[in-house]
Amino acid sequence: MFDIQNPRSGQMPTSNTSLDLVRRYFRDHGAALTAAASLLGGAKWESRCIQLMFRVDLTADLQDRHLHELAAFGRLLNLDRASDLDSEEAAQFTKLSPCDPVVHELCLLTDRFRDLLEQINQRRGADFQYDD
Image (cartoon, rainbow, N blue to C red; front, top):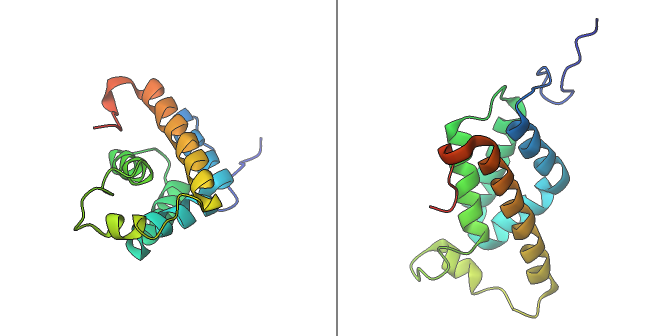
């Protein structure tokens, strides 16, 4: 009867559960994820985060490139590159104090993001392994 569109993207609602999960995560935690990306990876990662949220908002289907970016953010939040002393991520990590309350918030955000990726993994099966 009515064509109900996503007010932000103009897209019709999707039945793709994984896409819905990602959109909901970005709606609920997008600002925190963007701040974490900046804190842990610098301006490059902040920009990547904003671009990914924009692309996910506009897409009709969660695509491999989106999954690749989600996996990259999972690795950023898990501090996978923090031990590579030549990386920007390591430089950013050295600025954090373990006593800073933001560290606890980063841990909570990482746990929520890991839950999101695991839910996507369950829905997609072996096609998407984020912990490569």
